[in-house]
Amino acid sequence: MVDAAALIIGVILFVVLSPGLVLQIPGDDRPVEFTNQRTSIASVIVHAVVFIILFYLLQLVFHVHGGTKVD
Image 1 (cartoon, rainbow, N blue to C red):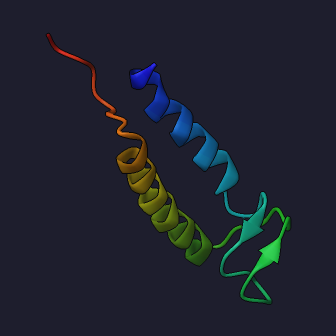
Image 2: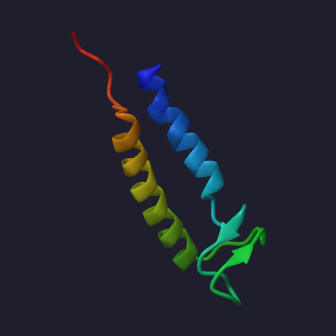
């Protein structure tokens, strides 16, 4: 389960942090827009940075390792 945990965390974060799906930071007209289903280059970069930070922190908190175990 430890090997699959990194994949599960990544998939959940990817779905939740997809720009325009739940929210978009920065939005087109406002700083934050909800469920507008559009993206911009700035929002893709912001969401990618937030994804990387959250993914790293969740791996540290739950002691998850993405690689395979070698005995």
